[in-house]
Image 1 (cartoon, helix red, strand yellow):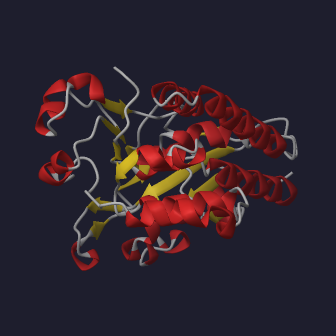
Image 2: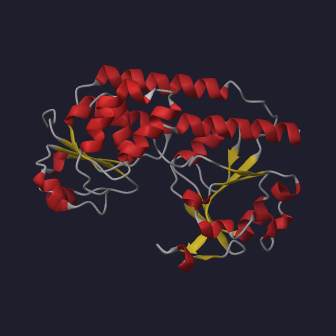
Length: 296
């Protein structure tokens, strides 16, 4: 495959990488969330928006074509892309490329579940767009930021066990009023980057390990495991979760994490495989350092 001159990004995570590599001019289509993702990247990496104003204008003016798997095939075909880039769990088959009107090798799909996967994704996109030097610089910056965070850990003889609650809805609906939650029965435990980041911050992840996707876990298993720390993300601020505060849930008061004040809400989605993970790692290190002081 030749270097594509016209690329469509079907994932905000991919758009972050394209922006970080300075590959804006090749991008001709994006998702609705790409600009917000890039602005989040600028904030985490302390890049003043005025210094990249012209580049942001380019991204803001791009046609919005939807995100995988609900992208608008006809809108994408009209852009005549030479490359389609997306990410998500699971494979992206050859037959999918045909529905977008491109050859199979013009479609690059990334199933990014670990920090190593993320580094590889950056390198592959850099190679695809002939920006290998920029990709090497970016992965070096990520490694440095990672090392700076882990150096701040307060060491513990035994790492605390950590449960990441990603969602409580056992029945999801676009309308929050129709969602069903039963945390006395089961919750969704976060995967993807989360287990990696928990380990890097000095904890031991429960129920998911690096490389795993999110997983439904019965509360009986959680009670048996007795996590030291419970991290609560609530799946993008889901209002259903706020109706079920952990201390008030049936059975949850029996957890060590509840009795030892080891409950911590998260402001960052630590499962999300994007270039903003250093902010999530920094928050995690701070949380586990606080826990180490509270429960030596």
